[in-house]
Amino acid sequence: MYQFLSLLINIDVTGDTFPLGGAFDESIVHHKYFEYNLDSKNSTYSTKNGIYSECYELDNVMISWGHDDYMHLVAKEHGTTLPPAALFIIRYHSFYPLHKSGAYTHLMNGDDVENLKWLKIFNKYDLYSKNKVRIDVEKVKPYYLSLIEKYFPAKLRW
Image 1 (tube, rainbow, N blue to C red):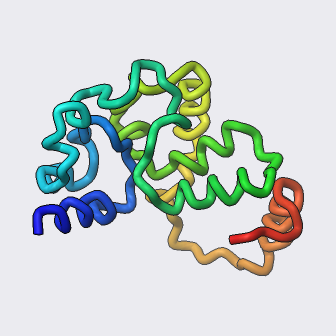
Image 2 (cartoon, helix red, strand yellow; image 1 turned 60 degrees about the vertical axis):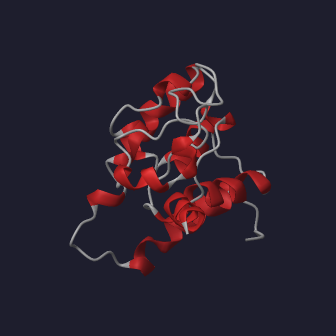
């Protein structure tokens, strides 16, 4: 039962993402439930750096799976022409412990620090910035389709 709870906690704590292989920061939503995660009992995984070194580069850190990583992989698989900062935003926009609480910055390199600035700007328009005014989808559709055509190939394998 303990192993089953550990698996559920790792997958289902929240929609927010967080690094694996190191200590779970207290800023992660529902942090208290990580006590059921076997990694929190591991002497290596429960340290600040865990299996990583300082300034490691976030792209080399294993992050919990979510829609962020999925879209990031789809974009990279299809050779998107999005700039690196946009790929960073796609991959880490649900990594709230980093961009809201400043946790895990010790795992970032110089490029990550620069890209985090763009993510913080993007975050103003993300999840908690919704407007009550309904958007006319048909009116804005041509604009968004032009962006998709600019940065992605005509066919994507999902």
